[in-house]
Length: 369
Ligand SMILES: NC(=O)c1ccc[n+]([C@@H]2O[C@H](COP(=O)([O-])OP(=O)(O)OC[C@H]3O[C@@H](n4cnc5c(N)ncnc54)[C@H](O)[C@@H]3O)[C@@H](O)[C@H]2O)c1
Image (cartoon, rainbow, N blue to C red):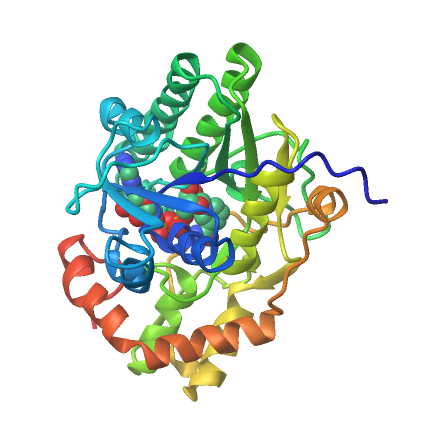
């Protein structure tokens, strides 16, 4: 049953933290292309995972020399002064120096995101994902104290906070208990709890989403799908954790971006929404499907020691998002993955630069030939 849709929230200026990353960049490109009345401020520290190349068309079309609807501010979410000025109308764009308009909404994606890195060095995950989220919440609280206005903050979370499921378990609903396995998942779960506490204690106008594994163009090639595509295109071995039978809930990043906008503008404050396309697949199936498309043999797959504490299966129930907000995935898995493989095939300069500079500088995990 479709419930009554709450009155639509229509922000004029949206700050996207982590907008130079994979999902943030997809959201920034999608928002500017599909919502001509919206201005977007990308706030990003440009860590190894942030890449302004992914926003090149945005700078050209919507930056200071385009229609002027996009602003970029280089900043750390742990820096309260810098973030507050990016949302309260006192900040300036990095480089161009334009005054940044006061924000009506924050979509918070900035995070340390790679599980393997969180196992090798958890500290950065606690700093950015936990402390950084607390700083973002406090800045939102402070700007609203100084200048009360209609405002929403959407915190972008992950299904990994729930731990893992047995093969026969039903998908998680939004009420499932948090039982994170990895330092990454624990840091994201901690951030989610802070978001809930700020809503309850201070009345901060927040919403929360939790999504499964994303894929699509511009994803940093340390994550499974771009790792497999780029290595398969180069004829290199494909590392497979353990038996490869771990199940993930896959979604195209553009479908995720559309869901984030639906939740921000039409969701109920204080509520959590699962974002899932219902495409649950084993890593083995994902990898063999890509090898087939690229025309490489399965013999490239090389079994490596399983990740410590590796979760077996994730699956999300998305009934709330589909029934309350009418969201549907637009990319089928078959079409989405085929397009993604094509994108990596035709954009080697994007990932070639990432692999040669950023990745090497950041201590590659698997990408030595
Ligand atoms: N990728 C997925 O499959 C997935 C699934 C569910 C949820 N999420 C969540 O979505 C969000 C985005 O994920 P992604 O895959 O696009 O990540 P990503 O690693 O591609 O990008 C993260 C971005 O955050 C920026 N950043 C990191 N630390 C920062 C800091 N201290 N201050 C400001 N900016 C900083 C980086 O420069 C980068 O641009 C994250 O919160 C992640 O937990 C991701």
